[in-house]
Amino acid sequence: MDPLVTVSLLIRNHSQYIEACLKTVLAQTYKNLQVIVTDNDSTDDSVDIVRSRFPLVRLVCNKKNLGYSGGHNKAIRMSDGAYFMALNPDVFMTPRFIEEKVRRFEEDPSVGMVDGKLLRAEFRNGKVIATGMIDSTGLLLKKNRKNTERGSGERDRGQYENQDFVFGPFGAAPMYRRKMLEDTKLGEEYFDEDFFAYREEVDLAWRGQLRGWKCLYVPQAVACHIHAYNPETRKSQPRSLRRMQFRNRYFLMIKNDRMRDMVLHLPYILGFELMALAYVLVREPFLIRGYCEVLKAMPRMRKKRRLVCGMRTVPDGAIRRWFV
Image (cartoon, rainbow, N blue to C red; front, side):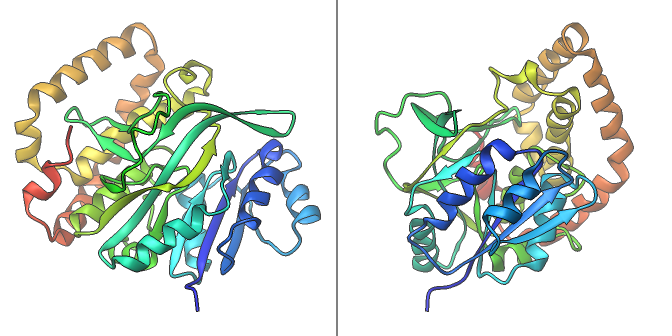
């Protein structure tokens, strides 16, 4: 029998996307699915849409917004699947998306994470319009400690058609082996809830790599993604989200990085820090609060760092090779 896959769809005021997204879930060629829709205290008609149009889907309503981390953590604890996919509501999968991922998991037990090819799309009048541009083919981690999506913004000309290993899966539709999630959790948290939103999938991938788990990019698993947050749309995003995105980079470094690697890449890190500080002071001074939040969270981050260091099973070079 095919292993059970849990699909965790996290929503918050996403009424415009929910029906189209869930239809692609239910149209998957892989049928052994457990679908959990978690609502993070929506104020629109998101919940009503799920209840009325998808009555067989399990719906969980949170009384407050738990963020990406808290929302998916709750779903993981409720799930029964051998594999867990965290799905954004603005992702629209091709029919074989899940099947292609599961097949790669089953072929290699050392693979703890699988990512697919996400293509940028627009959403007009209830229809998904492909743009021909790549959104992500897996996560890259730069020497300045910024993460980015491989291929993002490039026109899809078939340059990412080879299956290969990447640092981690992009957070819009990552799939994880449940065994890896249990192996890398800190306390009762799989995704770090201090992050709330943004970069939490990078943090989880980093822990997975430290434990020797691999992330495989599967180009046959294709989906379209609206991707509301990117450098081109940054200024249209709420300040709170921009602050979290800024702050969480430091959380990543404090928790997971090795001092010797930071020293090795110091010119890249310092160069970025100087540019970031100048940008904050001139363009977005409200981000100064992000520095303050990092200092306030330092005791918790240091405690988590000790836990992460204690779980490490790979040599330094195994992580260092991923910095580009």
